[in-house]
Length: 113
Length: 114
Image (tube, rainbow over all chains, first blue to last red; front, side, top):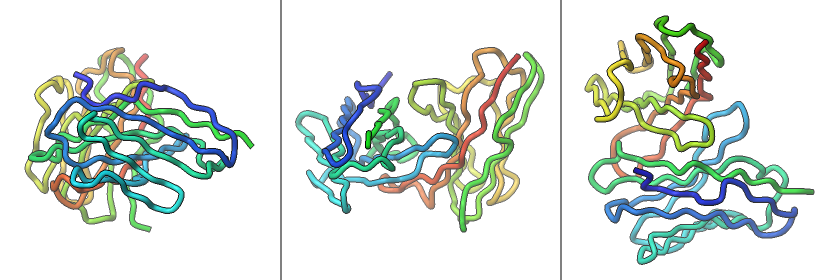
């Protein structure tokens, strides 16, 4: 059961433009959402998160938006840089069971110079 | 630097031959997790330890076992690997089990089964 879905396996963006990565979830008990970034030959690293009580969280060039009614979140990167090229995983944490954190399949972002 | 270390980076085993993957952490985190990730798929949780308390996911095959002899180390044992067990295995840690905890991942072990 794919409770967290990233429907775009890949995204290509020009340097300096905005990158928008999308994520949908099905379980209304998820109350905390995270984005992880993964470079080749490395493990995923935490990027940014958002609680279900908020609809936006910003950290430098990275902003995550949460639309609870649509069960949708997105990660915006502005401006995109070539070093942002990586696989981005969306993850959702269960309100009563953090150990049920679910991941999406990832979106490979390529930022072209 | 505090980190999560997985060894080896690449592991090749034969069909049916037991294999052990290792993970160590210097973060002194209470929780350690093992995830399986197959190509282009989402990481899938196999089990986790909260301190010494082992928690198995309902759909994790019996072929997969784990040991945590102390806070720092955790092992994944695959008793009789099949071709379908070829995957990236990721170890992760977290301080606790609150829903707002973030995970710290190792670099993973890529397992091949011949």
